[in-house]
Amino acid sequence: MRCRCGRTVLRQLVGHRAALDVTADAEELTAGAAAELRGPNRLDWCLRTTKGGPDLRWADCNRRDGGCPHPHVIDHQCAAAAAPVPRPRTSRTSSVPEGQLTLD
Image 1 (cartoon, one colour):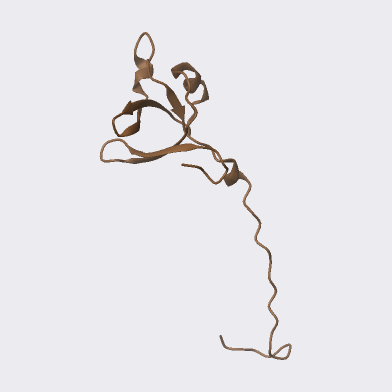
Image 2: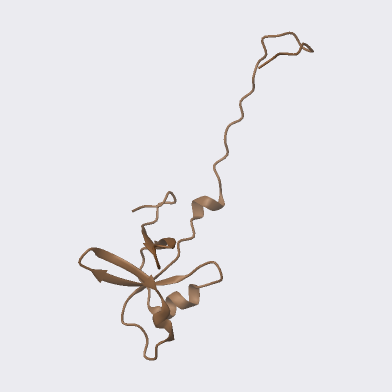
């Protein structure tokens, strides 16, 4: 799937009872590289391949010794969201003389 900023992203409901709606960059990273990009509002996810396709899992594998053998992905930060598209202003012309009140 593509984001409105043009990047390819993965989107999946993750967690107990699908508690989180995750949108992550499709670019695969090592567990260490993803951990470096992780922040308070940006999580990394363990990416596993199943018969049904890609499957995002909570990256608790970072706690294991020896590292994780699976690729990782990081939450998507959309560049398009940072710069909203300005809406053109439209002006209304009134059909009543200036100073007269109208009921809408």
